[in-house]
Amino acid sequence: MFRNQYDTDVTTWSPAGRLFQVEYAMEAVKQGSAAIGLRSKTHIVLASVNKANSELSSHQKKIFKVDDHIGVAIAGLTADGRVLSRYLRSECINYSFSYESPLPVGRLVVQLADKAQVCTQRSWKRPYGVGLLVAGLDELGAHLYYNCPSGNYFEYQAFAIGSRSQAAKTYLERKFETFMNASREDLIKDALFAIKETLQGEKLTSSICTVSVVGVEEPFHIMDQKTIQQLIESLEVKEDEPVGDQGAAMQEDESPEAAPMDI
Image (cartoon, rainbow, N blue to C red; front, side):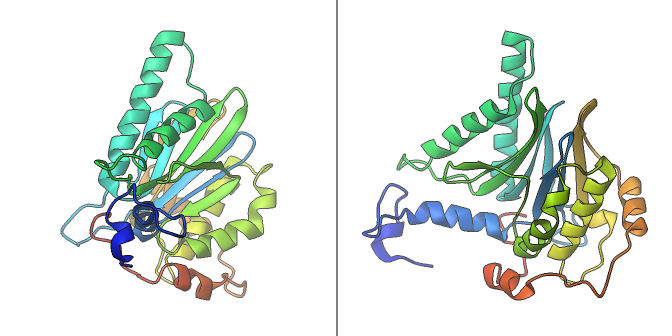
């Protein structure tokens, strides 16, 4: 992906009007383990793949609690995600101390996007190589945002990021119309189905995925492995139903292995 003299500095524009260092950071998100988010009127579910690099090592944590009403799932450079989640936690604590009320999700996402944007405009900094799915509940309802290393942010009904996420997006696009009125249990099952799409035939177990939930009168929490395994076993997988455009998934994410930075 070498772009000659135009990719040596994050502040150097190419003649086509592109910042290649920022695009490289966005590519790092695609190399990370998959993370998925989906929401209804009352609940938001985050799920992630958390494979270990070695049988002798533990996996990297991919889902972080920010506050009782907000959590994040990350894909990309895990160290960057850990630093940004700590920043989000600090912002929530400061707001709560000053105003004695929870920080609105939209405001927190804008602050995170501004922090990421600064790194695209300073020659002595590098962009954060991590994408964040921010799930939260406030007075305006349930929210799911995606924060990009470029400083952009988008609100979604459902979204997937990371390695082989295109297969999960295909599944979510087929089902998203039912998410708004879905129950908590149905959202969790759809999240597990979407995670299964990213595994490309590998057996889904509770040891390689993490699921978290936040909703009305339900603070953000990560579900325990035993409960997840029971849900996986209860799922009825329809083998005759098309899985999705696997060709498109492989075209977007050619490398089946995680990048060494992540992961």
